[in-house]
Length: 336
Image (cartoon, rainbow, N blue to C red; front, side):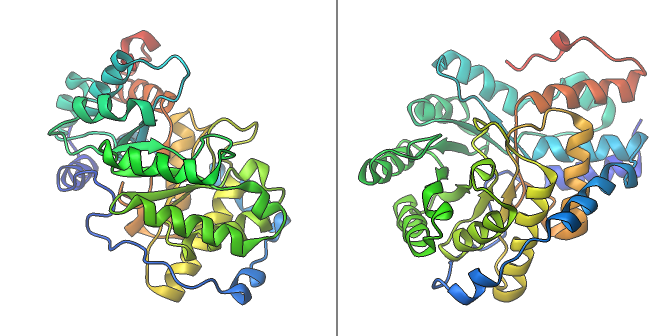
């Protein structure tokens, strides 16, 4: 059941390995520009109208839907961030990252070389993940800096970053201090991210804004700009632990900040919605929004990630339905 859409997505997937920004230069950042920060506005009613129209305007079916879902799989940061994580659980998650979709389904679709974008774990589990993914080309991302609240003493947060990098993490998901945003202390936020970026060295920086705790869409937009000025390679919505995580209005504000930053500086910054995205149909809406607002350059794991795990199981079920016409039970697509 190969089609032009399948062949195109296969070519794209097999031509790239999922190390962050291999083809894109890193965002070097720039000095804090308060005039730019103060100019950021958010028209909440217009943003909500735009987002409300998205699900109904984009209906992707059959082979094209399967191709887009495969693209979504390649952009997933497969994540386990539980208090009861063990090395064996991490090893199972890593095995799933290597083979995210059942081999028989991929064979029928004509797809080879498909993996997830990364595996995301706590600092303590980085060595186990690095060992399990050795030779796969899949990077390990570590949540550091006092995740999820980000309220550890600053010197300990910096040390945690350094230890995660030394343990083999190629990406560091850092947590910003929400109080700096709520107090409008943009210089403090800039200095914090810049120092964390320096501590990361060659590891890529994903700045978690915890948008559900920032108070307004305007604050989300301003925090996004400041993080990019400070050198963040990705900006990310949430830790997944807040009561409100990734939403379409927040996504629209953040990706328009990314677009504005690119138009002004020529540097592309990645985007990662995290938390609350568990259905394949939701993933399609996010991908459509990225394509419309940022363009095809962002439709790969170099510049776009889903922070999700349960999403993968639903995508597998949708792909089996595409091939067989029947929905399978969830246990046929285990996470690990």
